[in-house]
Image (cartoon, rainbow, N blue to C red; front, side, top):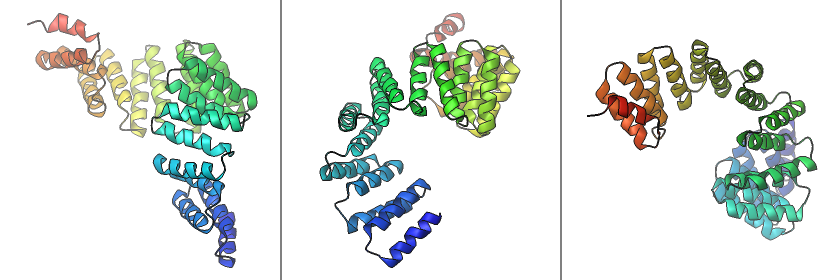
Amino acid sequence: EGAVTDFTKAIELDPDSAEAYYSRGLTRGKLGDLEGALADFNVSIELNSESSLAYNNRGNIKSDLGDPTGAIEDYDEAINLDPAFAMPYNNRGTAKSKLGDKKSAIADYNKAIELDPKMEMAYNNRGNARLASGDTKGALEDFNKAIELNPKFITGYFNRANIKEQTGDYEGALADYTKAIEINPNYADSFINRGYAKTNMKDYEGALKDFDKAIELQPKSAIAYYNVGLTYYKMGKYRDAVANYGKAIEWDPRFAQAYESRGTSKALLEDYKGALSDFTRAIDLDPENPKPYYGSAFARIILGNTESGCKDAKKSFDMGYSRAEELLTKYCQQ
């Protein structure tokens, strides 16, 4: 805040100082005042339209404000002004990635790396784009390189761990999440993801400790409570699962998966009315997911509402959930 005041005084002394507006814009951006930052970069560019840095940073603000198309226009101009400036290529790649254009994004990251072979963020971003494009091997190579360039690059460890987890290398994922925690012990997501890896390794007590730490760091984390619920579910402690899914829903009332999972645990506790209520809410929030239709069908049939249950079972089966065929075969033959 003090820096903003200082730059404001500098602007009062010299209203034509593009640098003062630019510096205040940078500071406002770091403080989260995105609209104020955008206004300052606009004036800075009006006063000096030859600054590639100003265009690059205005692009960053536009991207943060949800305008990737406007951001790309600014990155284009930054590149036109200074074709050897690596950062706008990296940032343009990120904006293109937000718009779903992974191929063009990768080309931009390639250029950024060509211009600055030590930019770990460009390797990391290219890794994310490659992963989204189905190139898991290439993504892993990029995350490895990002970490090699900066052994304290927490995002690189986090992303590499995610890949290892997705490919079933839970031990490797665990090691990377642990490294991320060593670098930043206050990053709740690292504890959540390490806990999830431990759950998959059936280290339920270890997982619960990690989730508890995540909740200590981020007491309103719906995903942390959800994972506590999931762990208790896997332990067969369905009442504890229901309680923690409830906490997840308390912090995120639109968390469809939490309703579905709570419904499943309630059904296992033979609370079929409660289960049906949760499955119905899950369907309202995520009508494209076939699983809560299956849960709803099961609960309705148990409660004696076979006709409506069979409709839900057919819906679930038609959406591709093969388990629903069991209900159709057993209860819904005309």
